[in-house]
Image (tube, rainbow, N blue to C red; front, side, top):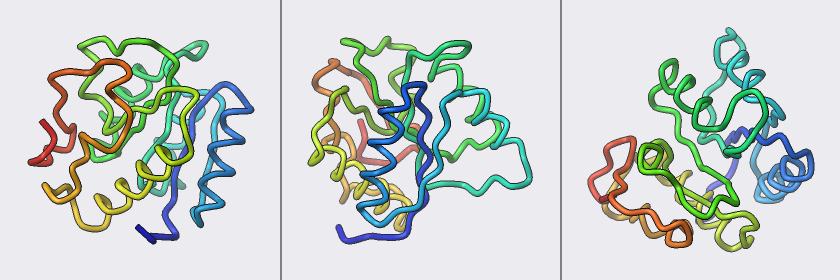
Length: 158
């Protein structure tokens, strides 16, 4: 804990969610960029102005393109980019389980959000490690998610 100055991106079609997540990240000392449309985010990823963030917090249900489709498209361009799914869906379908590093159930508690951010920063600085136990940081038990493995091949996430 205590990591600062990370850049995070937020993709959610609900302005209020973008504003809350952005405000929480800024309160924790991080820079942010937010997007209400996944296609706009993909345009940024394709641009020469793109700077890789620590992670992307994304909604799932959005018009025109859902969060999973966006993560798939972005991962083809930037395979090391980490995602955190923020959703009110009661269950994550098996084909989507390994697309994200972490899952937050909407509405989420600030303490869960802070733990996710701290863990993402540790992973970004030190690389995935058994020491961080990323599978136990978020609130994935709500969904329920089984057979998850880290999309970045960390050794402890199984």
